Image 1: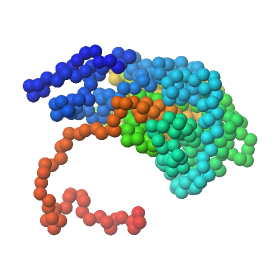
Image 2: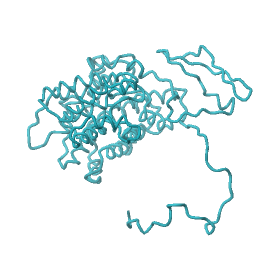
Image 3: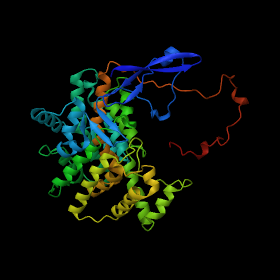
Length: 447
């Protein structure tokens, strides 16, 4: 974007002029790219909450107004009118696909859903209780060992084929990880089904029975994936960009993103919501007790699924997913006691002065966990489903980054606060650190 104004920074009796860069939606930034070279100063911004790491044309997010758009299209319009693969194409290639483009894109993905048979052996090597996110990140990284022919991040043909392989194979990896965890045989992809129908079948079909596909559940899953498709420069997306800035292959960048997403403060939040609701249910459904604990500054208890790092208004994705959640639960005739607790918490958040003042509205994680539960997906798989949904956004961000001439290898600075230069101490004269006395006797051999 054009730099029309200047900001002036005064330090040590000198003044420095910095360009003010304005985005297409009026977002303003101060360009500090030459600050260290010109002045010797750097900026300090823990968590990068006020740092723009890039200029991007993919996703616009306005947290104060509750707006989320992909390539200019509102999340509401995309969920109402587009499929997940249409949204993926939009994010990755910049425009909604034509009918022929979507048909070719869908066909390519459908024909790459099978995993190399040797990868089946990898699944057998994981412990039965291995977390599916550990399996997913490992298996995605291992794809780079099977497809070394498409490593070049700057070759468009390599990139396009890698994009198709990732979109096609990650749902299969996820389904195989789930089947392993419950001791059932793997179900291979079915090329006669659409993207989300295929995911549901691979998850829930068994060889000894005819599988009845529920189109409403497949549509609900499709909408869930759209809602997760991209969310600007969050933790996992920034991880993709940082890893990718070294020109590491796309498989490794996506694997790293899966690891970042796994954290309970990021993609694991919807699993944490269900665990919180379980905790309240086991304590006699005492919602008031836990609301009071959440308000108590001396309590360590947190209400999961409320508020957002960026949104200071109602998360637009939460409005959409709430309607879908209500529809599926009503259709299936599901009476979920956790849903009753969730509705009570939602009412509190919308009416209680403490929550209203702090704008702690229910976010997408609050409802997505309940909907995944209604679809029969176990909570250990919630973050895996999030990863499938976020995959197009990760790919789009990586693709934009590697083709941007302004991209440099990621290398944040720091303010050093450790000891100054000191003399080396011979081992015989060193004192033991408190709490770090010899403890090797407590370690199991070969642990």
